[in-house]
Image (cartoon, rainbow, N blue to C red; front, side, top):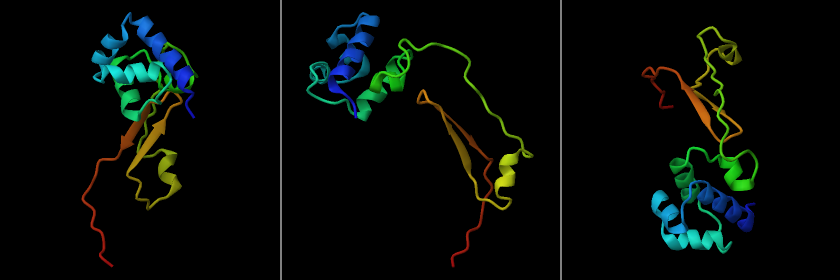
Length: 127
């Protein structure tokens, strides 16, 4: 559960970091100015749309930090782990005749990577 006042404090920290007033912040992420006022006062909880707009507009903001204070702000940059699979990897050994279409890896910072096989036209029986 999001603590409204703690979220408001983190939102204010983002605004201070970028030296934006509440009005300029609202304009930057494309929301009504009253939305920012209601969030900063602790009256409202942030919507998913609001959070996604903040993350899209400000690369240094981490999802978990914004929502619950865990993590860092501004985001510390570092190497992004990458995973690659070959046709002979053990992933195939899980189920030889599998219908695995894609693998998604979720990271603690809210990001993810998706790996998808080249698709072939498959016939499905209509039984």
